[in-house]
Length: 359
Image 1 (cartoon, rainbow, N blue to C red):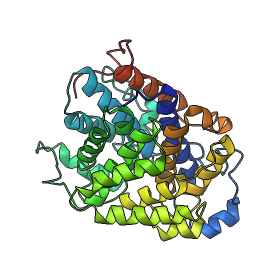
Image 2: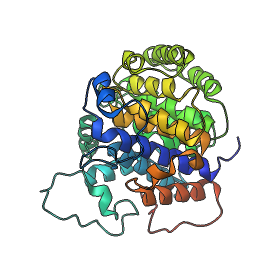
Image 3: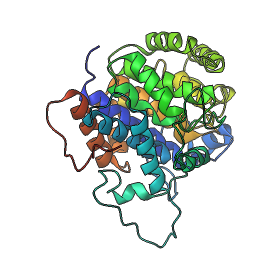
């Protein structure tokens, strides 16, 4: 398969962050009809459209996506084909940034442990998911890695799918992206709909970043899902999402009929329903991102998934420039995107202190 252009890789990560930041301040506002009455049905002119301390900020969705990329880079630099333990190490480092501390206590990032841990901005708590926190806390007890055969719990929350875009961006094959995301997803989410939604999403990102149309990519992903035990729920909801999209841009009522996005298969279905048939202009992307968050559910997660899909498909240039100018962590996200591309597809060596080879 062709190498994805850097524009699509950075567009995927930045697009995900835009959707995340757009939805984070309104995540718990409901119902969607009241939300639209309050803010309007058209995309806001500014990313920081709401009077909230969370305006323009990314949540744990983007934080964990960055740590996914970091884990993959570290595995690559170490020459390790089995990425799962490197991903667990990355997520454990993210867990460390979320440790409880008094609000007045300043963060002193540790040195010598890599680019992400050294950035004080990533030590902010941004509504981390309880399932991720509890599963990762348990992972420090020295048990064997959680697997599909021996899952850590029965959670199907969206905490696995919302962090899985880098697998699709950096894999050599669609099947590899699917399996890596599945095995990293089950580290925290043990229900098939939790980890298989992550696997499916990674396969979609793989294809979109390589210029495969979303409708075709869905067929490829469905074939991979079909051979996995417990995939029925995810596949059925994806079929409903495609039927919704076939009728045109989904309304808030149609989005909410797919669920709230709190679980993996619901978040994936909402993202697919919104992303299919998007106008490729900057304004069309903005309208799609607003549609993906302006509902009474897990707005930051559904927004981040739609942003990942559109950024991978259309590249950085299609993202609203005015929103990018207001985006939290934009410089760090760009840096990780460039480092990811360089590590997997480029010829220049990375700064070893930014990505220590140890998992």
